[in-house]
Length: 94
Image (cartoon, rainbow, N blue to C red):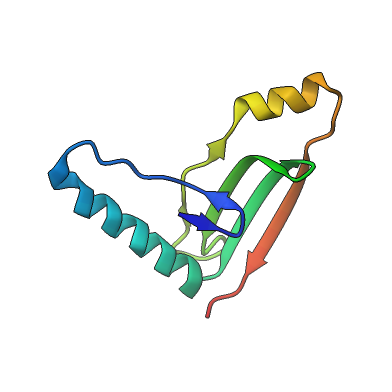
C-alpha cells in the first residue's frame, strides 16, 4: 500500500492467509482516507529513508502502520554528509 509517500507491505505465506492479508490492506487504506491521518517521511533529498503512517493520531482510535525504514539509504546519506530531513503531512478525514 502506498499513501502520501508511505509504503508498506503485508505478507501472506500460505494461500489461505492471502485473502486476510489483502483484506487488512484494504481496511487500512479505507481508514487512512476516512480518518485524520498523519504521514511522517524522513528524506535524503527526494529519497525516502523512513516512513510511518498514523491513523487518528490524536484520537481514541489511534492506529499505526508498520514503520518502514531503509537502513542502507539512511547510512548512505550519513556517510556522504547529507542531512536527513523530516516531513510531516497531515490529512483530514473525508
